[in-house]
Image 1 (cartoon, rainbow, N blue to C red):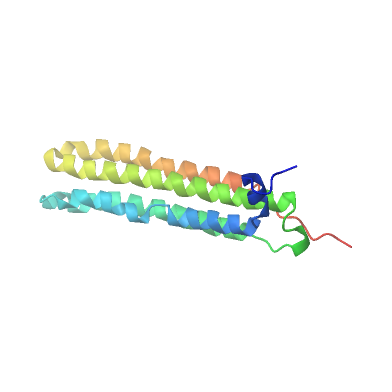
Image 2: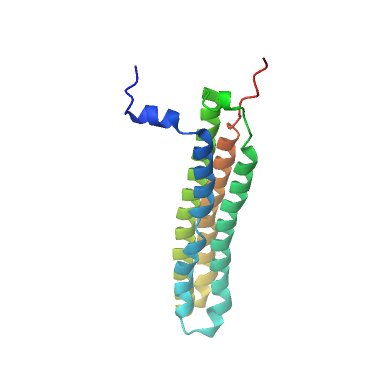
Length: 171
């Protein structure tokens, strides 16, 4: 018998649509559009030749935010209307948790990716101001950092494939 005040009881009583909505919100909200600021720190350098080069880091940060929007749209398409009698069935709960977990994975993977790209982008601008031959070398590292976001998107899409809602039960 499950205690009525336990976490497991609470998680089963919350609507799977709530978990789905929270997962979609985390996918967008945490994906890192506000991380661009760390990349812009390098723009404070008073070297005119690096101004356009620093935009590459900003574009990488914005691409990470777009990953979150794309996955949120994919997750939103996974939502289906089910009859009230099957909302709390195991299959509905599994679908809600799958969308929730997918959103968390994508959101936080993109957050870490945005931090990585922003910090490397700032370092790229600072090092390019000192020695222009370092730009391409550090840009390659920045590209590897941006791959973290793609890995999160891939894992999120694979996890969201588990979100199947139950069909209406025939009477």
